[in-house]
Every structure is written in structure tokens, then in C-alpha cells.
Image (cartoon, rainbow, N blue to C red):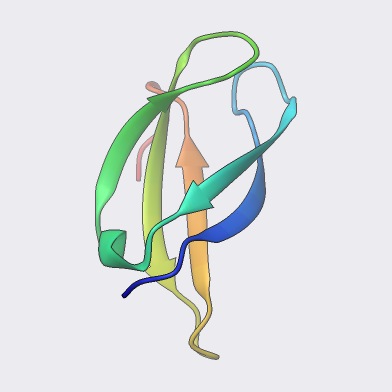
Length: 65
């Protein structure tokens, strides 16, 4: 059973800090979630650090991955 990991991200639009849950099953995946504050679509990319920890990168629609 995969355990969700809570992490804090900064919205690329409004800059607000938002807590999100990351599923280890999403490793290597790209998906979109709306900001809980400004409702704009945030692009998420889940990866794994060299130490084995899940990391998430966030981008706005006009930024490249």
C-alpha cells in the first residue's frame, strides 16, 4: 500500500504556500490541479530525489517543464 506524502508548494501564479498530498504511484507523472487559493491550473511533475525522497515541481501554463 502506497502512503501519501504531504508537501508544501508555492503557487506559480499567486505565490501562496499550499499543502498537497503526493502519491508515490504518481512518480514520473505529470498532472494538473487547480490552486486552492486563486483557482488557476498548476502543472505538477512528481520525481524522486537522489536520496529516494519524492519531490514535486510546479509550473504555470506558460512555463516549460
